[in-house]
Length: 261
Length: 249
Image (cartoon, rainbow over all chains, first blue to last red; front, side, top):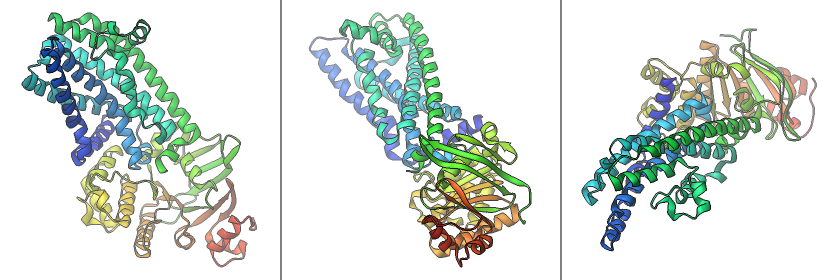
């Protein structure tokens, strides 16, 4: 199994080596985001919001973990559709779970690289130290990575079923979740009814926990329990949804149509 | 190696319905070891759906498929380990080099000594100098032959070829046919072959099946079909069938 997963992972890594636009996804856009939000934070600081740099840059870097993780799954499989390689993959003796696992591992690699680059840049440009999160750093990272995998799997299932018409979801879904995940502002800012929805997302607990940790200097580990529990639920639902959708896709013959059109 | 009586592909009562439409309607056939079986028919006759059913990409409404003695519904991965597919309508990632593409698929199929195997196949299809070229920079003829190299990487016992010579000039198409014939002769590979080039089918296939509206309307060697249709070319038989004509069973 690991040989096949490794082969698929290698295929995507070759792509990053060969394709400038794909490599830019890991570094260029996150760095541009960091620059914009970094300067916005400095401005807020000057007009009297001293913790703006901490909260905004922390939010940005962690949001990127979720975003890269989700994108790794959706873009990798969509790339196979774009280059008409999907059938080659699906007629190889590969389990669909192995394909998903390879894209999840790619998400992990992308998120680590991107977080490392953003963390270093944020430190040198804005004196923001990601390590202030202490022992909470890795579990927060893991929680957002898992949520990205769950959302990525669900998005990909819809794309395999509905084809090119659903591709906008690759970029749209994260931005649908961003406002209700309390990424850049506290949960309390949201209207009460939206807070209820927000509390159903693991990402909300991570960002709330991150702000609490940065504010107090003590790791807010309590936020991890609901985050990890919700991640388990989301991953189970996403896995079941993906499996159900793949059955539908095989039943209706969409796979061949999507791969050869 | 001449075709042996041993059936490698057995299809019984295969039906695939999409709502009210039967894309494949009670199709039964078999292919022997080392046989090249042409799957023919006009657009919409059910060829592509049949191949997708044989590859397990689409689930049949009813019927049974056994390949290499294994039930496709239960042992798909075991079958795919010993089979492969190439089509003019799919391709390998254009932004990877030929070596990278073949290396990735070699790994997926668990091919040992990949470097040697890739070299052999590039020689077989007469494109040894493209190894380090980015796939997107190849000519269409080279791309088709690289796709065929991928299809032969795992030394398949069963090969599904969907219009593999569609984009090739006559010279390269003949080279590809010769390579396929050589592999069939030496390795006894069973091939299911679709093409709209009837001359090519006559040259290459041991037996042909004509599909029309998802049903088998003729089955036999090219010579038998020509005799039954009282025709001098498969192209004329094709046109007769596509226009609703019948040939003797």
